[in-house]
Image (cartoon, rainbow, N blue to C red; front, side, top):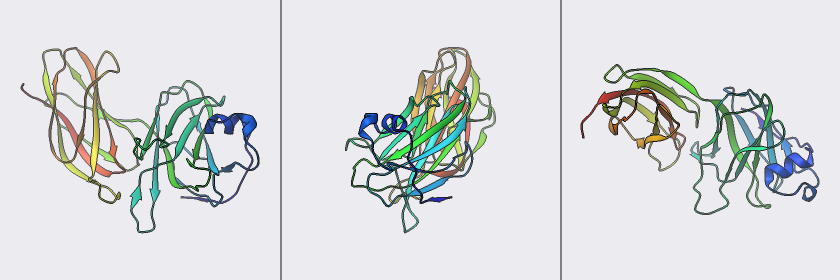
Length: 260
């Protein structure tokens, strides 16, 4: 990880788009230059000393990639907290393609910001900014691509999936038919989290074969079966998984026949 402690003046239009303010409103050294980040590369650690200062990380990406940004606040005692400020991803033209803000008290801190499938090649920018002009930043950030862990079959062997990057998506695929009634089977669950007071877990979604609609969404906190129900259509389904609250580790994901 790299500690960033140098300041650079970025283009006013870029900063204005990232922080949600008019370009003319930005003045002075408003963004600390960090990075560059590398997709699926190492994480970067940012610690700002000037209140209100943002940190901007460039990274190279290609059209067709689907990414996620992993974020967490490392504390002095070795535990982690979710990110509770602003995160914005800008495409090579400066347009916002993904954003997160914990400005509302109803929004809980996050460890993951999903980025829609990219439509351009080039240099993207991750902008991390405090909510308050009087606040500073302390955050670790990484950019990960979605990975396909493999393909299985209903009642076939489960696939071991490793989670070694905060917030990264891992997919397992399986063919299904309309008459099948299935459950996800999670075994060899070995997840841990460094978030104080949190239980380690795994977010799981089942995406339908003929659309990106979600057929099931839930959280696995240990081994067991999660009932999905009837598949209702034929094709290749996707089990999308990502760590809950900064969890890391591994689990085996399978699909089995179930009953109503």
